[in-house]
Image 1: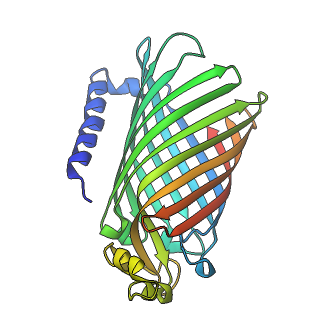
Image 2 (image 1 turned 60 degrees about the vertical axis):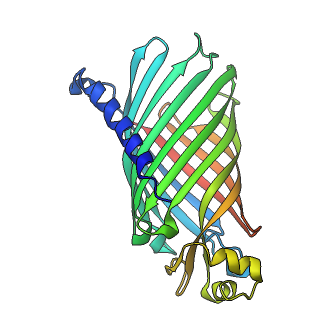
Image 3 (image 1 turned 120 degrees about the vertical axis):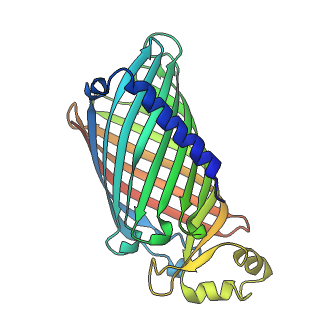
Amino acid sequence: MKSRGKFALLAALLAGTALAQNRSGAAGWLDNLTVTAAGTASWVENISRTSFEPTRKDAATYELSLSAGRHQQLASAWLLHASVDAALLTVPDYDLGNHLELGPRLGLQRKFGLGPLAPVLQLDTALTYKSARLSADRGWTAEASLRLGKRFTPAFKAGLTGQWIEHNARSATFDLSQHSFTIDATWDITEQWSLSGSAGRLSGDIVANAAWPVWAQAITGGFGPAVFNYYTSRPWEVTDLYGAGWVSYNVEADVDLWSLAAAYAISDRTTAEFRYHSAFVVNKIGIRYPTDSWGLSVVHRF
């Protein structure tokens, strides 16, 4: 599941682009620097991503993120953007889930035509280190996405995004290789209010969790040969993430994703957003892990 070549290629892309821009002078990158901060409080149902409903855990989560970056016009139709992003997630009830993510992000944008209704193609790359309280989950995450977006009217825009993510963790249980496709749309109802939604499909590795009594039955044949054969072939370990003896394990799955959000512009620089998000996970032998969350965010651009 390790993909050293992919990480090396992405690192070279990040470093090469940065070095090319440094030739024009490091001081130029400090001009028009934009700093954005966001705070989010969420309630997550089945945060433990557990299949056995009586043992599912719900919890509140709190996230603080900070991004510093700027845009560079390369030509009339080309725009380069670079940033350094950091995000801290805390889960007070299950603090082994706390983690900090930090790393650079680079993107290249191509606009096809003039005016606000012209379609835009955007490539984004990121290389992030995840410093998790649970040491098995620490490691580097590589990410690349390609998005085609278009504003169809002054008040309505939509886009299609393809994304690839790979997390190279200390433990094979937390190694992830995922790809997804998402369609999204935003309707600006007024100058202050907007509604948005998205729907997508993700395929790849997912980390799920189980209480020990349930897991013990799964790996000893108590739930049948299909469950026994599959779960004993996948990486797993006791992590105590959601209680004493809890197990984390890695499965291959397909995930239906969708979200709805309402945003309110408090000022030119500050926005509040309420978002509902659903992730319906089904692994390769049909076991289901539904997760729903509600969150309130405040975003401020300095």
